[in-house]
Amino acid sequence: MLAAAAVCPHPPLLVPEIAAGAAAEAEPLRRACLAAVRAVLDASADELVVVGTGPNPGSARPGAWGTFAGFGVPVTVALCPDGQSPDGDPELPLSISVGVWLLRRAGYTGRIRARALTERATPAEATALGERLAAYPVRTALLVMGDGSARRGEQSPGYTDPRGIAFDDAVAEALRAGDPGALRGLDPELARDLWAAGRAPWQVLAGAAGTGPVKADLLYYEAPYGVGYFAATWLPEQVTGLPEQVTGLPERVIGLPE
Image (cartoon, rainbow, N blue to C red; front, side, top):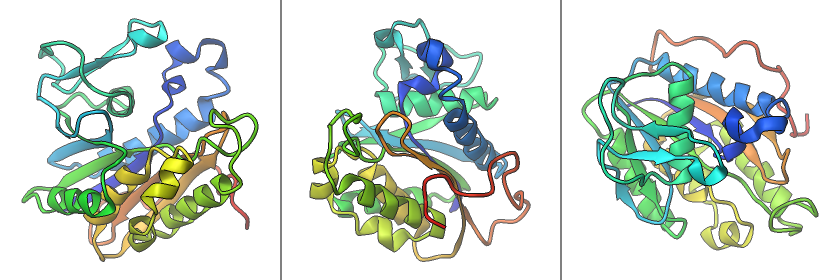
């Protein structure tokens, strides 16, 4: 069963060693992501799964690890618990590596599972994966990693597409409302046009949530580097013993109309 889910983006600048002089600028996003992750950890799930995009779909090996060496820093992350050594060559894609980094930064020391999809996964494939993850016979928490459009304006990596901001606004509203149907309905062709890498992982979340009510909280929505970033939590309402709200964050959702 789905115990809890968090949504976070995966810019490498979340890692302070990479951000360097921009570390303070990235702090509001980093703080929101860590708050979302800690809310999920409070669910005390039996399985913790990071979902992201990468070149090769499927489950990562238990000993798999990733590195941020390509960004100029000797920071590594691993799926195995503290005290165990990863093995093989680094293979975790960026999206999952950032997710694992967030979990470790939040203080989690246990085993992590990881599932990757390609950005060309169909909505049906993504939602079916979510349904399978939620069907595990143990309490399962998801950390869903995905960026919004990178074509929001002249400062965006993909320059300007007038549809980019509207697409991200719709995603933010779906995350805020706890609306899996809206996430299922995201158009994969449009998402590719807009360089929105999170479309397939968000549809995994939609599949995992099913039709049951969730307590949704959108903690962050902004585009500080020209890319739409979201941090959110979805907590199934039947789950008890969870905090009523995440504290220490602005009451007003950033970047959305009142």
